[in-house]
Length: 362
Image (cartoon, rainbow, N blue to C red; front, top):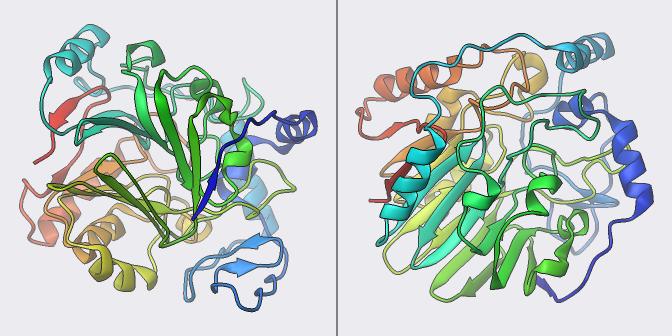
């Protein structure tokens, strides 16, 4: 664990490079360099120039033409998505429900991988994405098709902000710059992610390696492996770490998976960190499978992950707000429900939330 107390100024060069990069490249990645060298005496995922996925993780496939075609589709896609009724809670209802939930632990889906949680009296947000585009160069790149239910100004002052990695749909700078923060707010993220954030508004910044831990006011937070990658430009691929998190209080244990695909590491960390009361699992951005197999799990694989963590309940995330890949926008929850039924887990085990919906945990 590394702890910083610092004020950070975003470098102009980094911003310029971000604009040059283009969003779809950052979300999926094209053909990369040869496998970097491991750093002796460091954990396996530490390599020269950055980090890599756990042993045995799926690898990227597809030729250059397939990747360029995929990226062009992402840049040029402007089809209108019809939202089913109830997908987004009206702002007035969402605000009233959140205000009325005065006691106990709760979870609110802000959309995509963004959650607002109250655990042990602390307000916690994960990967809040409330902007119009998941891109450094709007109006190009993935555009949100579902409106925001709870805006930045509707959120309570946060005690903890958790960021899983540096992609634009997870580390959304315009949102982060306006988040309401409590006087002792803490930013928690994987190694070298804090360098992409203006940290001057936080009382403390904690960067964690996989299996690193920190505690504050009865809340324990542990960073655990995921299978993904990092990049905000064409020049910083995998220079910062990515991961999921376990949040522990005296009465609850929550797993926030971040962005991940499925691989052997979950057979190790699931039994190690489970059982959990609630698993927040990514179920979208998985097609074309040949290209996405190394970055995003399918809904069926998300159920497998939840089972390995012995989750008592699961909520699907990373879908329903912004279209990053080729599957129909509302296919993920249908496949998620079917996979839950096929696994014999029962309707109460897992499902989805509406954008802006608040429900108690447990």
